[in-house]
Amino acid sequence: MMWGYGQGMGWMWLWSLLLLIGIALLVWLVVLVSTGGVRSRHGQPGQDGRYFPAGRDTARQILDERFARGELTADEYRERLRILNEGR
Image (cartoon, rainbow, N blue to C red; front, side, top):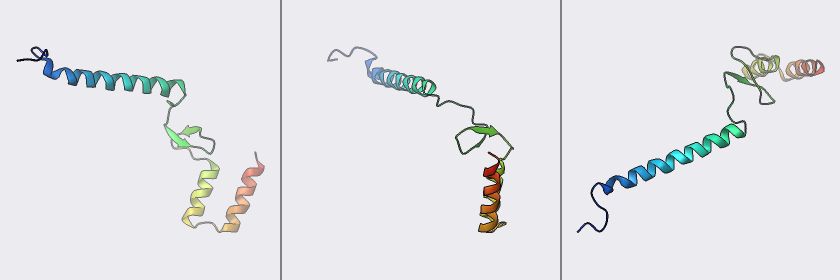
């Protein structure tokens, strides 16, 4: 007895699963593109979320890195940060 499945219907679940995955990926891609989630990420992210060209650091990033490495004291860091912020 075949119970109405016929010949070759045993693999139908696989095609259904692949179709559902494909539809989900397509919906995800449409949402990602429509919300601006796809952008070029070929550089360093800045404070405001924008990306700068690769290999180019901002003065703030360099200052943060030097402070993190211990090259600057807290007072030197604050003074240089104040000077950087005055230029805005």
